[in-house]
Length: 348
Image 1 (tube, one colour):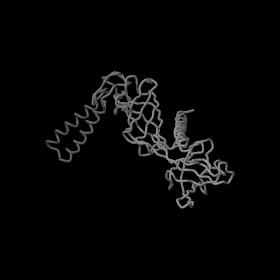
Image 2: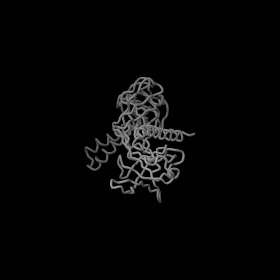
Image 3: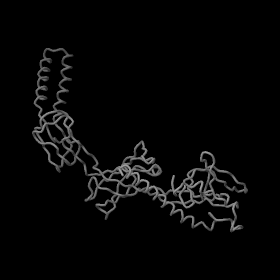
Image 4: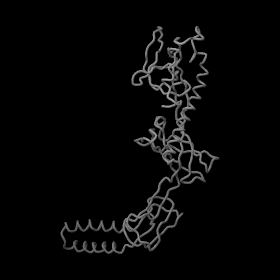
């Protein structure tokens, strides 16, 4: 199984686990309202035969949405430095493990040609300032800037404060423009990119807290925050919509290094409320349209369009529709649950 398949399989298991937790909480709520006849036959017909009308009460259940995550941490920033010119290396000024500051010189290549070109242009500028035209002088100034840049391209510098992770160059080596030379990392903070299921993205906010547990430090819970939410999601090979959300660990504890893996959770900032109804009370029409029959105060029955998600064990969550807690649903005891329930139990 390749890396992509492993990630998708973990995501599928987390989705199933999330539904099992919701279902467990829902089961407790259902048990508490059994006395109100939820999923029970009417009192005047304790053992109805097929076709007997049944009633079910729409109940509300409040729970904390927990999103399972996993991944690995990376340095907050990484710079893979490269020469922008070609030549022999004349200086390497750092070693692996050194601390460096932003703007610090890391390595240089032979700059003899660049120095000569710059000096020649500056000599021409001096002459033009005495006898040349304004246009000639402007052109020479542009050539001087270009020559200064070419000279600067023979050096590489640190782009931020950090540490030297690797040095792949020695004095005397010949390097082509674009070859990697020194790698700098910032480990003062760590980051991680985690896949969040499209179902769960509605509960994710910038600044939200995540709790992570690392195999290297199972004795502690490491706190991270949601630091970036992308504008676009993506579609996995398993047909799941996900978003790659970035987490930030501001002060990593000792013993946690880039590349180490974790398991964790993100908890919704507010409790989530869901309406529960029996799956057998749902009628499905053409094109998969769903509806339920609601008993109104005058005793009449009204058909209400709904959209639901099957949770398993005969229960469905109402995702949309004009229903509220306490509404009484009417349905036949001739259940068509098999036609409604997705095969294999809970699913979308």
